[in-house]
Amino acid sequence: MKTLNIGEMRVDRVVESELPIFEPNFLFPDATSETLDPDRHWLEPNFVDPETGKLIMSFHSYVVRTPHHTILVDTCVGNDKNRPARDFWHQLKNPYLDDLARMGVRAEEVDFVMCTHLHVDHVGWNTRLVDGRWVPTFPNARYVFAREEYAFWEAQRAKDEEVNHGSFDDSVLPVVEHGQAVMVESDHAMEDGIWLSAAPGHTPGNIVINLESGNDSAVMCGDTIHHAAQMAHPEWSSRFCEDPDLSQQTRRALIEQLADTKTHLLAAHFPTPVAGHIVRHENAFRFAAAT
Ligand SMILES: [Zn+2]
Image (cartoon, rainbow, N blue to C red):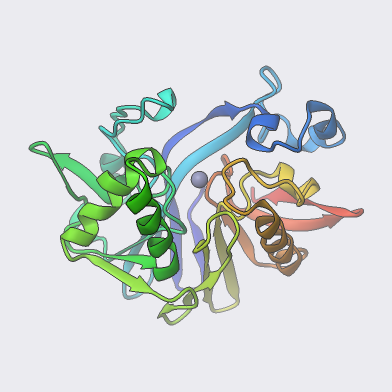
């Protein structure tokens, strides 16, 4: 993704991985390969791999630099994490921090880390392994978690040994134990032009992050929209949605809100070139990637 300027804010992307990853009907239980056919001409080759038929997804963080702060949004899977049930996420050794530094951001310079929700692929770089212990990767950052989201997973953890592939224990709790977590309401305003809104369904405390500066705006929708195919099928919730019906309602409302506007959509998993706009097409929508 090219740098996106939203008024006085600058948005960049740090990529952990980008690959054809899931069969459509694995990620979206309601999908079949035939239901994708009418949209293949705009989904391929960017969003759907023509060779394997798999959905292409990116795992990345956004780096938002405002006149006041450096903010990291969603922190991928992370290095050295034990994820045996997902071989493509197991024991990664990626140059994520070097890539961030090359962008002009050292770990010490991150002021806020925000997670749209607390799934395994959104919290990983919250921590890193130092001398056998998980410590916050960004020593001077406050980590902003939606109170409702944290409370949900904390309650799950009380019932279950392993939550979100172990990521609650190795990527969320250490941040809380180090006193770097800030729990906020789901409509929290960070600073001028950056605020959260509740987007429940994918997870109970799922949020989207809104940016507005000058005449420009963007919405970081996290996994409220997983893949561009959901423009044609907003009714498809993912198999990872805690409440598929509510997820569908939330997604539809967000798509309607953004359709045919100037607001950029910045999703958590859209592949290169990532940013773009939602446009109405017949009875549904399409995604027009920014060039
Ligand atoms: Zn995700």
